[in-house]
Amino acid sequence: MNDILDRVRAANPVQPTSTGNPELFDRIVAGPGDPRMRGAGHSRRRWTIAAVAVALVAVGAGAGWAAVKEDPVSLFRSNPQMDGDPSGLWHQQVIPSSVRQVGSVVVPGAGRVRFWYGQTRQGGWCGALRMPDGGWLGTPGVGAGGIVPGCFPTRRQVNDQDQVYVLNGFDYGEDDIDLRDSGGGFWRITFGRVTGLRPAARVVDLVSGTSVPVTGGSLFVIALRDADPSAQLPVHLVAYDSAGRLVADDHRPLSKLR
Amino acid sequence: MSTPSERQSAEDRFAQVFGHLPAVVAYARRRGSTDPEAVGGETMAIAWRRLADVPVADPRPWLIATARHLVWEEWRRRSRTHAGPEPTADAGFRETGLDPDLERALRSLSYEEREAVLLVAWDDLTPAQAARCLGITAVAFRVRLHRARRRLRTALERTGIESSDLEMGHA
Image (tube, rainbow over all chains, first blue to last red; front, side):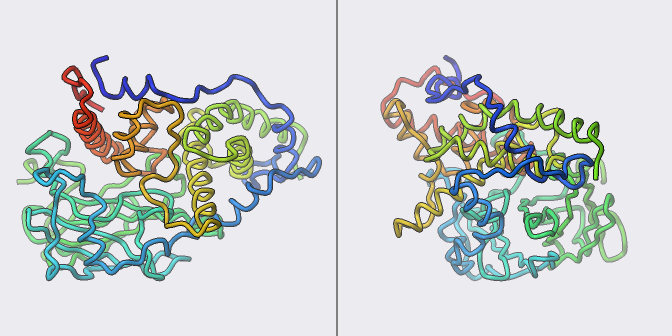
């Protein structure tokens, strides 16, 4: 057993059973299906599922936005990203005076989502997205996925320990907001820093054409609607300076732009 | 209105998705659901209602992501019922039969880190599938898994388990 994952695998407490459940299948397809799938809209017979499941649907995505409503400095101080190793790379400590709101985007159906940012004593940065009700995306029960808010080492710092990233002039996190249950869309929100050749003025997604301003030469937040969350959303972020010159391209290493 | 053949086509497509029910129920059971069969059933009911969203060629990440939300909401609802705290890193984790040292080590991880480890080790997802399940990029997942493995190894070393042979490979 030469890998720690093997040890965890060996301790798997539950193995899937191979039994099918034709009755459940019949009950489900008797209900109204996806109207986008022609042929799935009939109801052959009524069915009910356990009350617990009905209740679960009633509190679908988005219901937990208010799970954590700390102020941003407290959020970054508690730093959910911290891994407990005081000498480790992820032990980033926020500089409270650096914490500020640096941008926002309006997500249809959700309202204005604000990007809060801070610097750390270790040279990293802190980032978090705040919903209109004060909850933080990525905290327990909020949204459909994405990065936990907190303070991070820079990609360059990570690479100094372990070559993970292609350094392309972007350093960002992603969160998402799923409003499909309420008739809205699935939104991917990218927030972070441009660390390109020169200070940036705009970030553009070349696929969707979405363009957002950059704050202070480096900080941006952009929301992109994802029509098919189950697949990889095609995204191509580039950053331009105030003269329109390319300063970063997330499809190319920064060294190739020089 | 649809024709019988169109309906049959939708049901055939759903049948491929439904074949993953045991894996979804097992996921819910591992994560401590009090009613994993109901979570599995509701996950499949959602898949039927959103069949166009489900990638039939590889539906497991989509299904487990859905089940993950249901288990999470179940835990939150239970916490509210019992006037308990907000969800913590302990939420959604079943430790039945685990080596106590390994259990402690897994509990020492954040919820997100532990989920990264368990999706790969228990739910048998590839890193790319697990990334889709969590709604993050493959690169972000690889970083998260890397950190989780490192922390897990450190935690196990602290418990005194012989781990000198535990090498961290690539995600």
